[in-house]
Image 1 (tube, rainbow, N blue to C red):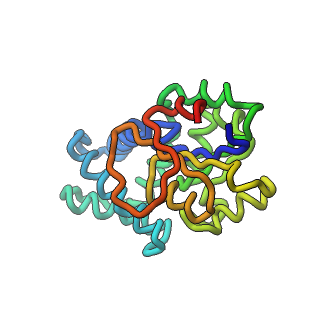
Image 2: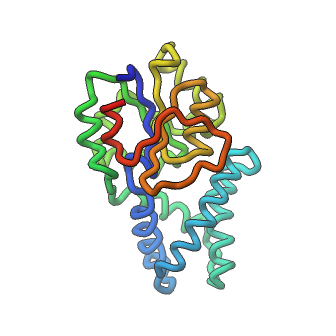
Length: 226
């Protein structure tokens, strides 16, 4: 067993898709917009992912991600709505209203607590992540939480991980494992930090990148057998 596990949050420990759907519909209701259909949510999700990937490569800023994704979404859906900042602020709050665990992840982390150091490493916003972690009870299980908003750098930037090492102290690279669902954020970040990488891939997606994967799992509980 590894001595340190760095856990991604959205899409790994928590089902982000369900939270996203809930939050968007709450925001549409809040701002008296029309119904937000499943098809609209799917189209928004693709737009959102494209912006986060551009952030990971340093093309755009975090603020551009948070606002421009909604601007593009409203334009493509032909929705006349200008309060993008207000919509995003509400969206961040609503993302933390409800939490949905993947693979009963909370019980897994509780079983591992004490035998391995566990840290959250997330690119989510501070507002949304703080609410999610408190609501889920994961905040009291983790030994510490690292949110890109507070650090000033996003995964996979090595400076994100440099900050983590400064806070938790030095560890042998072979003793540290990062677990996440994103090849371009979590796994690339692990490659940059030269630590072991475990790709959580429940939907059997193909790895069409040059990112090195040490372990592939379809259920988070497989971690206990690595």
